[in-house]
Length: 330
Image (cartoon, rainbow, N blue to C red; front, side, top):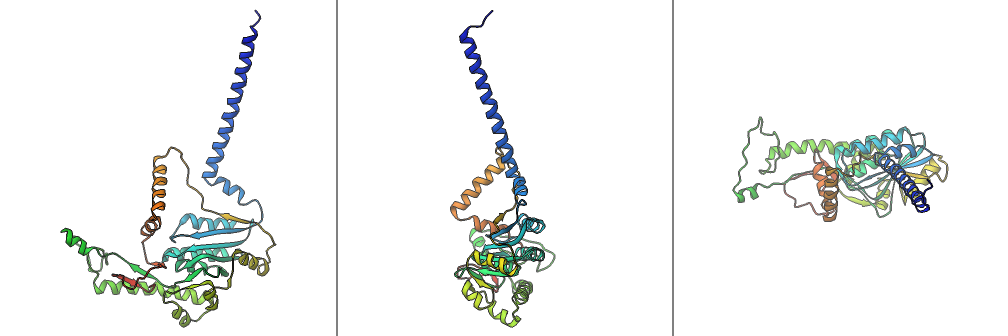
């Protein structure tokens, strides 16, 4: 029995619609797979090793012992495609142990590949410590650097607790255990203990500057009063090698380390964690980060998360009247 012409047309239209949606489903599936590979850092690993290049590693914000960032230095060091490295620094400092860890990573990288530090806006305190790891240090003329020093700070909320009628009791094994703490004024013994440890970290920083910048310890200690200086001043004081923009760092790699001209500069970033569109935790964290960024509290939260150990950080505020602070970075 022959089919009605209208039925034949309908069937053909139906087949076309089904074909369209099949293709659309395949395209969506491919896009989803690519997105997952990108979110997981797989594509980064594939494409970052495809051609000769200068790798750029950014060290920004509050410096801590960032394992993902340290992994970037390790990957760059092992990549055959990377012929030279620019460590771009935009940081006022952070935890002294974080500065030490990243400095060690830069030195390890520089032992394998020509490495130059570029202070784009600010590279102070632990940020300057990181810059010292490279074989050559460049800063913009008006960038801020220096602030060689260490600081320890803690709040004293004892008077606030007294006003609220709250008393904190404690039992501890020795007088200096968990001292200082925010629930009572610090004792002279606690301050002296902390200052001894702080001076040891400060000496490490001074010796590092003296060794890497070929300066005497006496000269470094003169500069290590916590002062920040511009890039131009830093060059005059021999704290850096050159003044200029990133092209000056590239020129040093080309002229001094004989890298081919016009190598592309490729940003190497920390690999991302797994991504889930429907993850409640991921969504909540994204909302929280957006709120903190909007209110300007994101930096403060990052600092309080990394308060294990001394801080080597420059604060653009007057700390001279800060109560209960011990340090040399004032």
